[in-house]
Image (cartoon, rainbow, N blue to C red; front, side, top):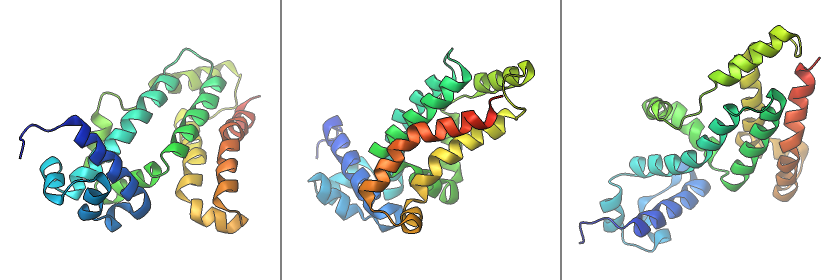
Length: 203
């Protein structure tokens, strides 16, 4: 076996694993299934990734590394507070509609492997919200938005954007709609969430 890892093969494995994890989750996925999906044998899969956990983490990092810089850029831009809220919702929902497995990946890892999450937080591209927090505090002091702690505002933004994806099966049942209609609702939330939050805090 060639001892030099080929980047094309590695990318094929990661994309195959993403599809399997998306449909079956971490617990339900099998390495043989991932190898079959990637069009390689299981021995070659284990050569690139020794365990399902390492493969899962690699898929997670691949997706998160695409999202985190976008969110970091939004939170640290020189734009207005309201514009940041709008862009955050738009960018996050757009991304998750293309990578619907990501929110559940995060929840799985938070509960199952907190050490991995700590490593993720320590990475350079992890979003920094210090500028956002100062901006919120300044606006409260100026009297242009209602008094609110920046941490609470950020949690509100995250919760309203993330939960509809994590709770999608339950919510679809409650409101009795199918996937296509639900996806359109998520498209609508790009503006609905932002405007709801802005209207809640502006004076």
